[in-house]
Length: 465
Image (cartoon, rainbow, N blue to C red; front, side):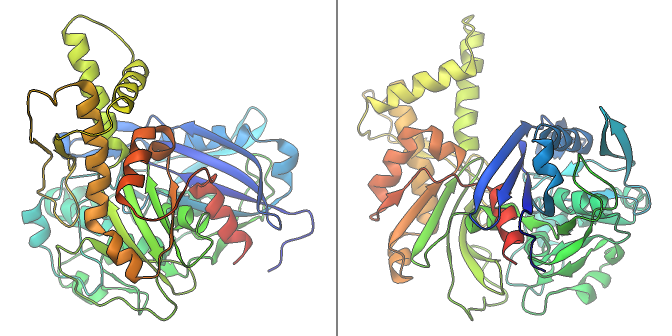
């Protein structure tokens, strides 16, 4: 359905650490307004240090705060909503009471009710042994810890009573769409279904026969529709957005970030935020092979209009550098010298900028990799002349870039017709040392500075589908 003359599109991204909302003028693709809020939703999981869970109430509160900070006149003109968010994760709710709508400061908003925690994509409770005990999926994507279906299998084995409390499940962005539209049964895009595992992107169906044979609760699986489809309409006015506004099925944040930045088929996108991804669009008609090698570093994500993205998706990006800064802050505190993380960050960057090269080598896989979950970080080639803060910081940044390059090397990009790399993501934008290392290792023109984000991509996708 065509949008009206003055209609605007709202894009929402429910990220790992923050929520963003952007209002887009669909014809010019101009972002008129945007707001973001940190969720501060992380929880100490019941599953030990490997568990990664988030408080859904805090996430939705951050989302509502984003919306209420946008101009009311623009919100009244929103006629379509696109939603994206962190893939792979899962939360559970009761289909008849997943939220309640309240009046807050003269605005209508919703609050979660009787929902579980969100088990995020970073969750590590599913060990390699546990994953190898699961039935083999009929899919071109391998399973990994943090994938929705793997997490549900974990609950089935370890806490079966927990699952019996709920009759609906989805990613955090699927939950948002379900609540906005009052859906009795959640709907999910192929983006998010593929990210859960046990989904065949050719037939666009779950592996229900395989799952049922293992007593998997298939009733929890959402109905799947094409990315870009309308999931429903808002059942209430929401923060000045009219009741009856169209809401698209929730999309993957990765696909939306790429959609907002990938203009040419000869472009690849290198995104380094919390994690890191290098991707490009495969030709029309490409179909991935089923049952890839578990050690294959490049995977194929469903994109839009039955196309795929070739993706090297590393679990190690800005989170590794953040861990390094946190470690230094802890050491500093233990030495009785208090300082802020931001001060440490700026000082280590300045130290690294004064070092052009180092013999020190750091393998940065602090969080493992999906294609190699047991990999660990390491430091090698230490000498007495490479122990400065600048050397270590430079080596760490180089290691992060080398790691993603090892997954999808330059010669593979060239063979696929890539001529340019679009550099995006908060870590890459903030860290000039990372950018220097990108330019050293990739023999392509690198373009930075595009205002690229998943919220804008979600809005663009709904404006043009």
